[in-house]
Picture 1 (cartoon, rainbow, N blue to C red):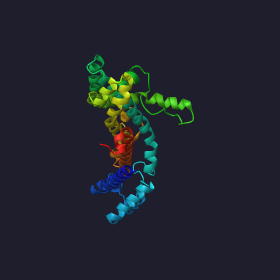
Picture 2 (cartoon, one colour):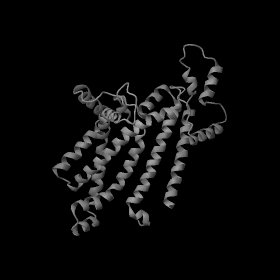
Picture 3 (cartoon, rainbow, N blue to C red):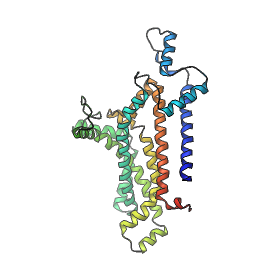
Picture 4 (cartoon, one colour):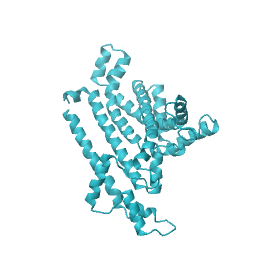
Length: 328
């Protein structure tokens, strides 16, 4: 419990620090979003109307410390402001409509790539120097080095445009009313997600494979592995119960980092396949200088990163008995 509360306190302080940075950066830039919104207006906009719009969107003048505490209060009460580009849509509603698609696409891709890469890395290390290891390890590194935009374009032109096996874009068929109680709608969503999910998964497998392979190789010469083999334990038990379990600890941290960044969405993949995730929302907010949405999304990404790192800390304690007993 002491470990739990120490880590929880650390992540709470990190959240406050990230929120403070998120508060300072937009205000350090010259001007404000509302003034910039009317800068290119063809007709004259009176200062009174600009001030009224500032108050409506929450950009009020006042001492910086009052703005800061008001900002923190809004964060913890869930009031993240109003989008400038999609006014009068709130930031909560805008991000809430996209977060599910990003979690589904990117989260599923991370979990699939972690599972596939870890298993492939385990067997590559166990059969080090075999034809399987010689082929699979360099191949995944080559695929990982290819930019995501190239993989996505190749997949689209091959399977969507050339063979016409899959749709070109969108999360579901245009004109369809989402019905989450209908199995046909689920199949339609999976059908549209097949290609972007393939691209997002393939581009991440190599990192998990090489990480697990290297961790396993470092452990295979340890005394407890030699003892397990000397006891006559089955190969399957030695691989997974002894070697893989200990080699998994660094990979769990890598998985938590990948899941934490998954909330930002696969920007390139979402752009090419016109997928309505947070990556697309972030791109639109940058182009429109929608600072309210940018602040909200950056804060959301921070929350997810801290949460999954905290989960990784707890999971490592469960996986490593030495941390539970205090042994080093």
